[in-house]
Length: 147
Length: 82
Image (cartoon, rainbow over all chains, first blue to last red; front, top):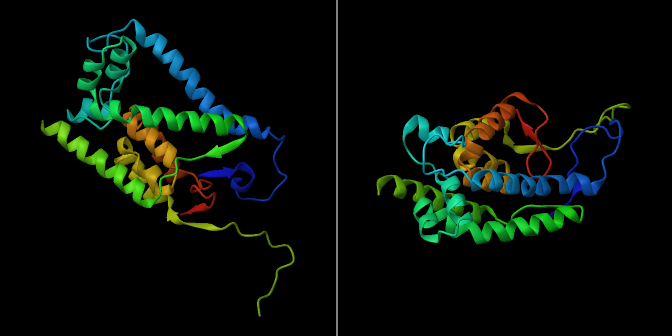
């Protein structure tokens, strides 16, 4: 869903801010920051194998506390294995994340394109789409912890 | 007949979503992104779902901010109910 940023301004009386940030900057910083962060993260991850302990990598606190895997657990390992071209290992790390990766990448490119053009963009998921997505995520979480 | 106050500020439209519900959902189910799906921020919800809620840190801070701040809006830009 595309909405112009003007229609989505915060409520309140207008004209109280200090200076106006250009529209393009307001919509483009987030996708660009994700790109920069992704490249930097990949560079950092390249030489650290997350399959081994003590690699100074972030971990999932949910799993640390409960011992259960959340739907995104294994994402770091999957990224590492994909960077090194090991598709089978990536599948083993987090199959659902691997399957959703093409969709996520496509969504990201659309978001980036709209952001650079000065427009805000949200994935066009309706109420039903959101319910399906959360249902699949929940089923995947239950399944991966049982198997 | 309604009486128009001379210096009344226009009231911003309120959301039908509550910030308390959004905060609690984000803190408890942040690794599924549920709080953000609730307020209609689908993109942020997906991002939290795919990253264990931003490694738990993001969704925790996000949920506390939902509970404590009074200027958070839903995806349509309407203020969340308190």
